[in-house]
Image (tube, rainbow, N blue to C red; front, top):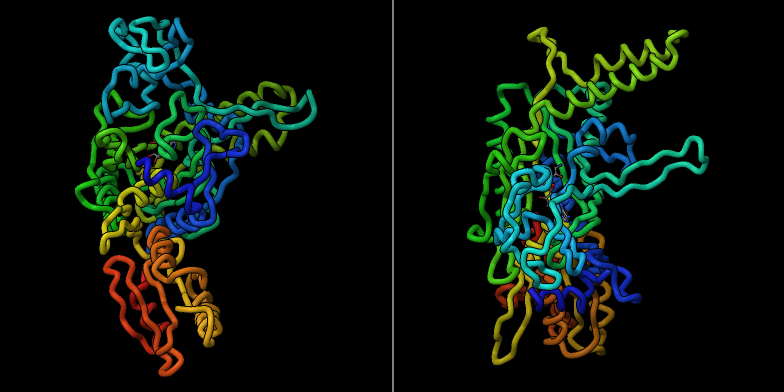
Length: 481
Ligand code: GAP
């Protein structure tokens, strides 16, 4: 892990945030290679879950939403971790982390109730090492709060969203009304989420600002178990297709006492991260959220309408009536063939972009000896590699740079490419190996005679000669993603 973190900084994948001021705990910036990797992870996900399916559409909601959303969803009251404070050093620690359940943490939505009565007398403070010196457990709210609006009278407290999911539920009616979708169908969204995590962990694994890729898949009650199983398999296959080794992935089903407040069932896809001596940790959760959220929002809008009505009880304006009427409809679904109205059940595969990127980096990273020298290589799947093709003139003379540039100008219209003419060619290959670039094209003396180039494969390091006129087709076949 240390080697990888150092490579990430050295090669411009990931930097500590605010690095010039010494960094900001658990916040990270993605550098020139990292931003490409992260975008590729998101594109691969979008392609698999939206572009390639006819039962899914996308959405991009605002981060700031009406505070009632978070009241209705249960986050205002329940989205908290149970923490204790050390009486000696004031460090706050999640109770479930104190218990030292190595590698397996209970989900925060469970509110930590399961540990509320736990005996802490033999637990050790990770801050100062003292034993059993803790306060009573208390709930620590994870949502970041901020103020919206400049005027004292009408400014209000709003939250930075802790999950992207609620934007999808809030737009369920809008999507139904604006498309011809019929149940079963799903809505996908990628976006930033924020949680004031009590403890952060290992590099970009658990941060306070992160990106999620979430699907809310709406189905008829009674078909939910089957859809949950299908999504479980399809999401696991996505990681396998993108090259993660099977032995480093597993499912872990949540026990009833660790289920989130909204879930009937949940399974995590876990990855064996190299934290300590190996640590199975959640990459993605696939939950059966039942009709909890849509039902809660239906209640939420009703209560807002009631409040509105009470305030204006002498004047029953059309606006109030309209609002009262409106809420009856959009969160339920009318099946026009069965002539039946119901609130759909929801299956939610929810993945972290940063966590996924970390797993792809870790799994693809290798240090190996080649002819007495060490090389670092990222064997990233071509669709995830930040640069697809490196283009080098062997030497900076005899027209090779001009030829190399011409190839670069042609190929960059199709893939992200990198042109490099500095230093020994062996070094240039090593730099691209570390960046995860699957192919390097080299222009040499023979190119000028017969218009062939060498194409070097990152993983096997084998080189083949390819005719200049066939180069694009050759790469297209290899990079076909
Ligand atoms: N809408 C459901 C939900 O948010 P979650 O299990 O809390 O469920 C889903 O989060 C995914 O988001 C996790 O599997 C993880 O990949 C990612 N995630 C959650 N908290 C994170 C954090 N603090 N830092 C990085 N990724 C996080």
